[in-house]
Picture 1 (cartoon, rainbow, N blue to C red):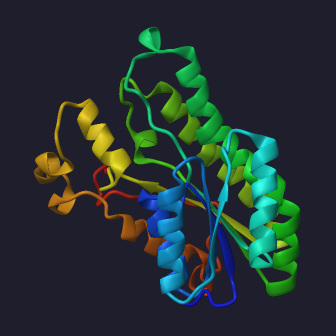
Picture 2: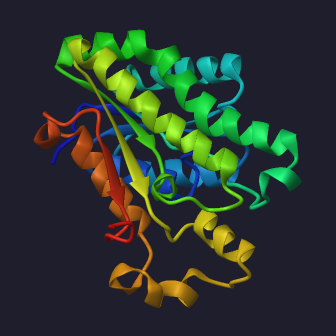
Amino acid sequence: MSLEGRCALVTGGSRGLGRAISLALARAGADVAIMYQSRQPEAQETVAQVKALGRRGFAVQADVADYDRLRAAAEEAVSALGHVDILVNNAGVPTDGKPVANADVQVLRRIIEVNMFGPLSLPHALLTHLRGQAQRQGRADIIFLSTTRNLYITPGYAAYTMSKIGVEALMKVLAKEERPYGVRVNAIGPGLAETDMGQASMARQGRKDIKEIAHTLPFGRAVQPEEIGNLCVFLCSKEAEYITGQVIYVDGGFTLK
């Protein structure tokens, strides 16, 4: 699968799934701009790894909950790359695990602003550009990162679950709205992944490492970040030309009824 000639913007690209997605896109031939909030050293490391793969890499700073800065950063990415025709909405914050009755309302608000308003704001800022790119080259792609937690209810995940269900609804609406313009819109829902966020989830449960529960997971392991990156490449490739409006869950079948 080749993404030669294409340019991607990946939010939350400094580490974890965002880094894996950025590197998978670069391996497939895309140039990549990553957006980060505060982890500049990690962001520059991702950029260095993209460049080591022979692709152009750039980092732009923005809090996805700050629309004005987000729009400016998106314009910086377009200017650096020349265009953007792949947009990956990956940035997100986890829950603190507290039930609604004990939660800080500012924490709840922050989760919604980053996980739901951010993924709405960035397409809003770039859709005119994405439509133009789709007209010129035949397609553009928007990928949202969701979660398998939408498929089963977990106490302490109210705002997080709300935000990700909202993202899936947004994806489906955008898929219909943008289909006439050649923009394909899909979502990926990872299960428990071997990332910093996955490890933090384990810590909230009093566990030291994901490997402590590996025996309870399909195939005896967690989702590998590279698997999410590879799926992202596929969804943006010509091999997936007829796929839009879909959520693809990657959990080894854990949530099968």
